[in-house]
Length: 289
Length: 289
Image (cartoon, rainbow over all chains, first blue to last red; front, side, top):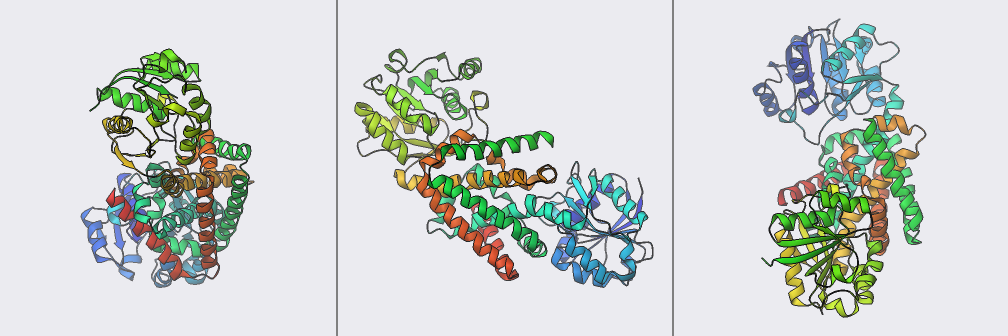
């Protein structure tokens, strides 16, 4: 286990904060400096001992860091990368937690310049619908997958450091191409988020929305849990992964049309086949995970 | 609290079994007789003391019952009603737990004949994705809503008995017209079930389904929990409430098309407005429940 002397977390929310807490709990980091736009959130992170000090996007904070974790919404990634590029130390490794990878890699190529070889794009597949430092907890990544999408020119030492850090958090680390990552996540994460937001929107637009909500039960609650996710973050994810998400949305729309025609002609057999097949696929998945 | 001397539960699964257990725990019933197609499930219900005896759709079982609960899938309701109609005692009240009410009322009008006035259609809005007697538990209905849709000719004594039984289970009882009930449930329950089944189906049909599932996380798990629901039961519900469900599916399809065009033109503002609005509506709902 590589010990990190100084970790800088840019964006001390659920994701960045939990990374810091997990590394602290594992004894894998000596000092954590947090950088964030919200003074109140940074104070909370200090109180909760998620970070040891508050820093800024400046040379004293970044120049001697071993690792910088960029855990800001995808939409803030560009200005952050632009700011840190000239300030990073020659040994500082940088990674991110963005939910999409093609756009982050493109940004990094444009903004990180001399530090690009020490950038290791990453995505921890974990989270809850909550946000902010107060939501962070050390075990968030335990048993979860983290995908790294290193570039051809990525420094092996930087990749090893980032991998080791995530493993210290209890995560299983995998490597993929950025495009493959984005296609996979469009299907199993971005699409369901959009579908959940769309359902709540539909209920809320009904004339008798209040009555409808009052009869919503546990199934509705779980189905829509992800519709309580951070709207700004999910707006950015959807826009960043627009192409893959549009393809999945189109596919889903076609699936619903097929389902409607099955229902319209009252085809009990086809309906049951679809439901049974889906249930079996889901049960197999649960057994495998 | 009206005490029930003899309760007959037809269909001793999660719903019927939990009703029996809750009434027993409340001391609201003396004797429960279970009727079911599956010998193994009935044995399990006896072992678990959900029922005190196994019965059949015959005069000895039904003739002296105070209350008969029909907790069979909607698709089995017709033959069951047809069988019990000539066997019910003159004081026996009958209720059901069907997730749709217009079709059940129609069936009852056709099948229950002389006993129709003692039939009180009902729907407990509770459940899990599990099924069978082994899944039953006494607190399933605690704090949950039960909708009764009595007919004009329903006997007030029968309505009071059924209401009191559900209240003994800890449920809050409401009355509605069958059509109103079905429209409400199409939106907040039947639609999300169909959407969840459709998503799992879509993932399972991908060439790289195994890889996709391996990266599915907590959001996917909760969103699709209801896709582990009983396929036969949900096939019947969808067919029984076809018209209302089709209307909601159409509305949802239109919503997705709008969302796709928002994404296609990269309209960040519209996307965030939709996501924020949905999150706020969901948070309000959670606070109110």
